[in-house]
Length: 167
Image (cartoon, rainbow, N blue to C red):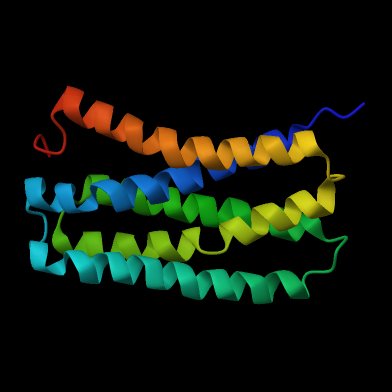
């Protein structure tokens, strides 16, 4: 009997990782426009810094995964935990110190922390589970729902609480 515990954990991780990426991309321009934390002319450069650091770290993650022996999955678990914690701390830092320098830093750190997570999660799933249609559907559900639901919830809460004008 297969209980899909790993797939559920990985699905939740994908939900928040991709939900966060989509919400950032969707609302970042509006955030800058309403809060004036940074000039709008930096919008493209800021998003480029975030996604460039994501890309570099995703490539590093692929290199890293190839060097972790198959049976040493705990190493990848630990790295996932660290990258998730760094991303959460970076976002928390921005909420405490809302200014342009912090925003630049947080965007790059978020990209670094976000970069290898996709590969790590799918690698862990492959190492720890037997591939089944239901397991794959669980992962895809988290990925797709996060990509859709998180930006929607950000928009609803933004409208309801008049955020970010209250920053």
